[in-house]
Structures are given as structure tokens and as C-alpha cells.
Image 1 (cartoon, one colour):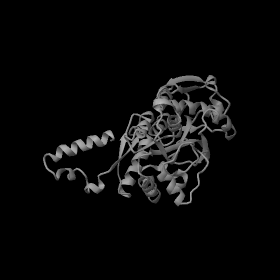
Image 2: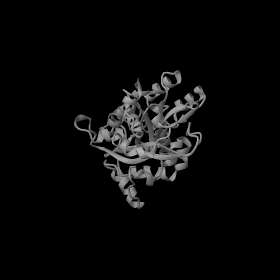
Image 3: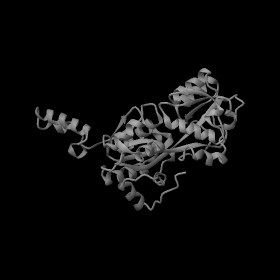
Length: 328
């Protein structure tokens, strides 16, 4: 039995000693709605948490599923939670999911199953708007946040983005940081010439306002084969100037990788099916909470990754005549 269910049952039994009808008061709508589904996310304020909040809201209000957001310390914490069935859903980037599902030993989560790719994570190197740097190649000899001791995936992505211009960490002046927030802070304080962050992050808007404007460095598409040797899950996606894309002055392609929704093999097939169908039928409500979900669709969920999909998701894709798309 799951730990959180054991705790709930203990409370219900304790209350039942006072009144045999009391347990029903703890369950809105009675026993028929007693099942609660948790969706594990990163901390409040992150893109990941907002995505989870949007999904939970729609599944609850439109699908009648009692879904609660469970914030965690990070992806390395939340993925095992779903693998152990301590949470029913989780959101993490594809690299983190692959690292866990294809690992070995005690850390491997054999029961983890994909629902699909909910939206791309788009990231960029940001410089001051008045900087003479225009492209990734211009980072040679510049002070760049590196290391990301608390976010190892970001370190790999940084190196992959450098590789698009045939650069390596040895070609820049390293500024060791634990995470992307610290990298942005070092940039604002003048201790770094550039920083890497996801579009839509509040920290990007803060830096833009503080330094008098930002500009995104362009990535050469010809450099992507070299980049994928370091980080095989990256690709380029096109964006237009707009509020969500600080530093983008004209239509351009930016570095992207997938943010994944996943579940546990023990979750019922019909529940996973209903979750996908509810999200697909109520996309405007998702976007109202999380603009990044503009890219969501049931068709975009289904991509060719070497990770098992949940049977309920596969049934939905089959019923709707959907075929898996290329991962890049």
C-alpha cells in the first residue's frame, strides 16, 4: 500500500471511532470521489510547477479527477517518487527521465511509464542588448556560467549549445555555478558576460529589466549534428518575438528539448486514457494557466523515445489513429 494512502486510512479509522459517518465527511462527494491522484513537480515558481498546476486544474475541474500538485526539491526527487507509486504523475525533462529509466541498480525505476511530451523546454544564451556578441561563436573567451553542480542536465545542455559553434568549455572563461538562477544573478552583477535560462522564466524578465534589455544569441543549425553527440535529445524550434520570448527580436530558431509527463505502470489504463482525453478537449484552459502548453496536443504527446509508454496512453493513441513522431 502506498505510504500516503496508509496515512489517509489511519486518519479515516481514527475519525471513525468518533462517528461511523465521519469518514465520508473527509471525502468530497462521498466514496465515489475518494481517489486522489498526485502530480509531482519542481518547486513553486518554476516552469515545471506551473505546467503541473495547469494539468491538475484541468483534470480536476473538467475531468472530475481529484488531482493535487506535489512540489518536490527537483527532478531527481520526483522521478523516483512516481517510480515507487508515491505520486501518480510527474513532470521532468527527457534527459532526466532517460537517466532514470535506463539506469541500473537501485536507482532504476522499472515501473515508470510515459504519457508523452507535454511541451518543449526552450532555452537560450542571453547577453546584454548592447553587447557586440551576436552568435554562439562570439562566446569564445567570454565569462560563461558552467558546472551546474545541482543541475547536471543543464551542464550537458550548455556544452551541447557551445558545440553548435565548435566550442568547448575550454574556449570560455568558466564561472562555476550550482544552478541557472545563480548564473543569471552572476550575469546581472557583472560577474558573467552571458547566462543560460529557459524562456518564460521570471528571472529572465528580471534580468531584462535590470540591465536595460537582453538579446538571444543565434544558434547555427549546421552545428546541431555536433551538438547531438553531447546531448542527443536537443533540437531547434522556431519562435516569434513576443512577451514569452524575451530577447528575441525577429523570427529565429532556439534550442529545445522535451518536457515529459509520465506515470506509474500501476495506474489504471482507463485513468491515463481519461487524463489525455481531458487535456486534449480542454487545451484553452491549460494554456490559460501555462502559456507553454500552447504546444500541447495529443498528437505531440506521442514521440519515438526508447522508454515504455503506459498502456492507457497507447490505447488512446491507437483509438485516435495517432502515430509516433520523431523525437527531434
